[in-house]
Length: 317
Image 1 (tube, rainbow, N blue to C red):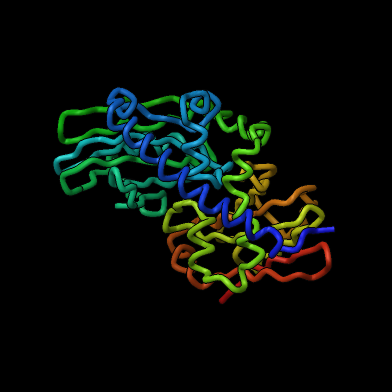
Image 2: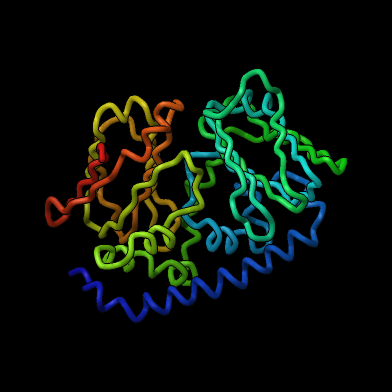
């Protein structure tokens, strides 16, 4: 028999505080590490099996970006000092992937300064020159649908720094297949409160739930998410013509926030139960600029249609 949500409240409240303390401590340690390790800052860091072997890498990701994007190869770079301008080679990106999301963040605040994607790309330009106030910045790139031998691009600053291109294996994300094996009591406690948060979703401010669960996403991405009990099936119904104009990426996570299953959604479907408590996250990304303009008019409505079945309808507002 499923435990009533209110019985989980004391541990969920403790988990919430535990997460915030860990995020603060680990985040500051990582910021200090990046500030001191200048060689590491000048190289692309790719999220993968090798990177997770480095000190604090997994705790950093589990507190900074715990909703793993299993559908994209992700690289980060920086912090880089900039006087007025940062330049990114676009040709390398185009040759490496069909779709991408690039982000510029200030440092150490990690506030998003700029997003750039294939939808904003100008084919006549070989480089993207970004004007920035004097300061330090980090660069993030997500490659969806990578091509053969994808590479992360050359990046230059106006302070005579050049970061070299980096070749990445198209199989880089195979490490996700076994990532959930790293689940342990520490990571379960770290994210325990999220499931309980969803159970009280109807009485909590939507912005609060969204802020706690969602990753720092690109502005061209819409998100749909919710909790699932161990035996629950999720039925996903996507209204036409959204399937023709958007890409939908589905990931299921366990309660410790490690990915269990994932797939690209190409048709309406009903998913098998997880076998344990967890949550789902759907990333909805436009294929054209016209589709991007329609993002605000698309909503997701979750309903309980049977004791062990939920339906998520993605439809017009």
